[in-house]
Image (tube, rainbow, N blue to C red; front, top):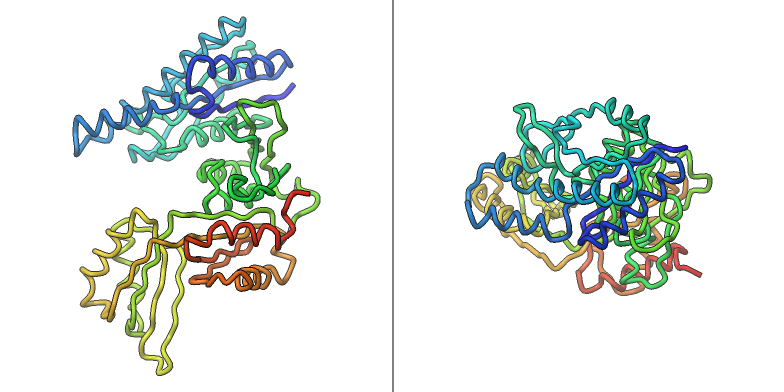
Length: 406
């Protein structure tokens, strides 16, 4: 007997037929003797509609009321799932975030979970009951509904799995696992059977859309085993586990890309102490997240060109902040370019193997792809290239690292 948290995303519960299909999967686990909790998202499109209602009603809205409204989508799905399970002879009931006491901070719209009391859930497991939980929501310190931001139901599921000490957290979605890269672009991409939390976190943060970054980070911190599965096909999924569970580590596990990047270059900035603080301090104050940074110093050492990346949605705000601080930064020109893409190769095997970066740079050079910015971490190398080369870069690198399916 295992204790399993099963999470179904919006496309998996998009209508009554799909809710019924998901319920069959839950019943299968129950019939196998497992203890089961189910976390559900709102039906596909519902959250967007609720957000639209808010926007049409109030342009500058109270975020507490916003949370009260948008959290209702998951409440409907949880009730419908519980009813369907009951119709199938499964002992089930729905729970909202405040009933379980999923405690959050008070940052409405993007709250973070601070604690979950799993004792009552565990007691209900002992009675053979399936808990159907509305994802994406909790209760703030002031006793108000607080939502966790987009993708928050994944975070709910992982946090609950940690709280009840589940053996596994199964994430059911519209794909059948995690692939070495986007199979829509690289037809030779193959499904990964097992991947470490750390690699999955890098893949998610660098553009892979399969799992929400916060949920993977929480799973890594709490040692929660995850599995990505298809809601629509009975196929093996991808296990996301601690690194010590992976017997043979690949040098490169996967290749991610993100079209959400934009590049900003400040030309001829004075190369002196305090300049970086004048640039990145105001950007941080304006909630502009800076990612990749590269600096090139002139021959006389007095001037530097500083290039960095921000999210595409932050470009206009970033440019305005830099223009407003022109007198302190003292640059000659400001160049912004949104026609770029970040391509990243990721793998824990990089720690113990040399030449990974050389392969990347050589492969891109052979395809005539110019590298604009480079950043690295212990298990990742990211490059910024012109967006028109996205597909070519992915296919070439996928082949170069031996990831193509046979």
